[in-house]
Image (cartoon, rainbow, N blue to C red):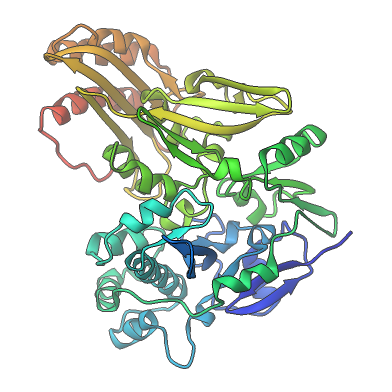
Length: 496
């Protein structure tokens, strides 16, 4: 049975009769002809296709609400993913007057060729709206991110601006006037539907059109039942990886099971000793929740995902794709993360490093889903750092990603966990390198032994990101960098 996708587009209720695996970018440009949204890379890298996605949020008393907007890449976003939500394009920012970001960009001469400008305006408008929401003390209904958003400062800094622009490529290299314009704006809201209006477009459980069916279970039990019935269906978290093939027309999704509305998978819990993230919690939400405990991990999250990617990409998807160069798993493995797998037969738990079996092969069974990931909180004497080496600082594929975690008592290393990405077919621990540190006084001799163990264990491939020899040398050098970092000799390395 064919059903329309219902959402708000630039403040107006919209119904689209289209395959739910159609990209939002394609529909915007070919349907309503909103051509301000551009196609650049079609991979979620350049930001020319950026739109704002809105969801209902509430104040701390759960009374008056507002719509929280985040920038997302429409080129890798499926139409099924916007069912029940709000979408704002660059055309929708202007009401009777220009949006403050649009006005500041125009007045400051911040646009050159103009191709990338709509996406840049969208990203900065999203930043301004988030700061306004933070100032109002809003939190997310059923979301993991509420406490983190409310805790953010409302004053926009240059660091905030650069972070917001990390996913937007300005081909004319005009970033200085763009940043100057952003400084003039501060906080600004987005015109659109009131939160109560979302009751009129509640997400459908199933959307089917032209041979593509999009399932949106809202409970874990419903998800697991669908998973048992359709083991070959696409499991869709944020789609920041799977959406690339969709954008390039290399795949069609006949059956999709979206995880985005499963309550249990959207939960983030904190106990005395652990942090637990549901598999559908986004990296933006994790960033807000983890920065207090592991600032080095927070820095990594900002680097491997722009705002557009972090607002959609999920921790479960990052793990489930089993990429050998995924940046999340090395850090999580070094922290001793545990993964929860669920099926109708029950739940099982295993150390994250045991989840990866071979290249793109995992422990996940045909009837299972990743339910959650938990990591221990820091203990006294613990030092954790994660380093990403890539050709550019932001939004680039790792050549090597290395994570180190040690616990010291009276100067002596009591325990150590070291994990690498980009060095093998799967993310891997380095057990002999760990043994070289345990029992030592964490001195140069121990680090040299550790580095030698790293080069002896791994046999990486050579590719366009770096040769095998380069990877081995870098991996060994990062052990010394960790030692010097802990000793307070940190030197900021932007990219190698």
